[in-house]
Length: 167
Image (cartoon, rainbow, N blue to C red; front, side, top):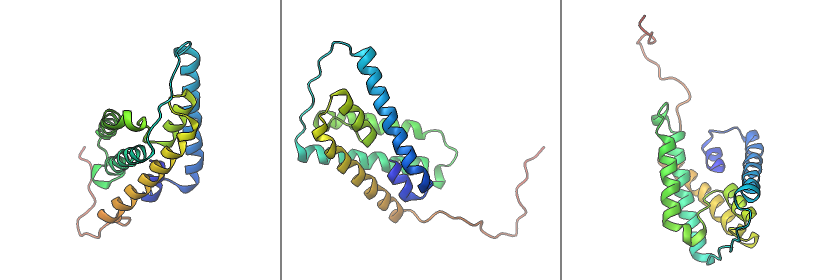
């Protein structure tokens, strides 16, 4: 998602690497907490996804997720609305239900890192998530930019006086 938002121009490029590092640290810490406190004696058998279907599943739902984020959280028409959390959450839930058994349903490189730390997916599969998730983010952002006009950066000239809040 961060890559898609960067391509959209809604995040400072200098903030991207620290933000991605923070996501990975958060995913790793969360996974370690789960291992230490919630999954003490549980044995996990890592998923063994088939490469083609897993790549496709991760790509499609990461594309959907990034496209929803770009539309709901960065578009001018949705500015100030509070529904975007629900739209994003429902997209993740739908993806997890639809393709969780196919790919593990990461839809984000940090989540992929977390599921590898947890042993839900083997480290040998992380390339599937990274390739599909980064490619989907780029494609979603490019399609979003093609469909939506560039954001207006200067006000439209008008003869009307500026709006004043009534007292």
